[in-house]
Image 1 (tube, rainbow, N blue to C red):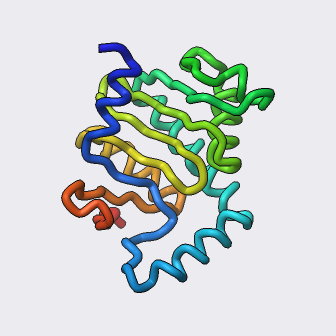
Image 2 (tube, helix red, strand yellow; image 1 turned 30 degrees about the vertical axis):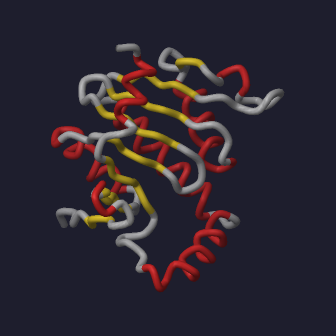
Length: 171
């Protein structure tokens, strides 16, 4: 199985999300949630979120071997030289800049395949960060890192995809 096939297969596995909200927003509160999210996308919260996600990912890379693939970027965009390429050998400064740009500008996506954990972290722009098939060991690293950044992690139940599960963090 190629690495791209492995990424595609992991995208069909159970997953969690790194989020700015501690719990699922109820159906009746969706209109206000959508308005609040749109507001946050236009404020300084999004760049702070991007910085937190970069911090989490770079710290995880100290524990896990990874292959990093950047999906297609628009033509003549500064990300174009990195699109449809594996960036695992790039300097940390390049990785951080690419990740921040993807989150803040909602351009392209980063697929971070954690080799030993057989897990995928997907940055898809905005507040969309998915963690596919996280194992117990990875979660031991991930949860404190997410908490340290003031964010939340929810496992998504595939039978009830709209339901999020809140993980209580140790004090």
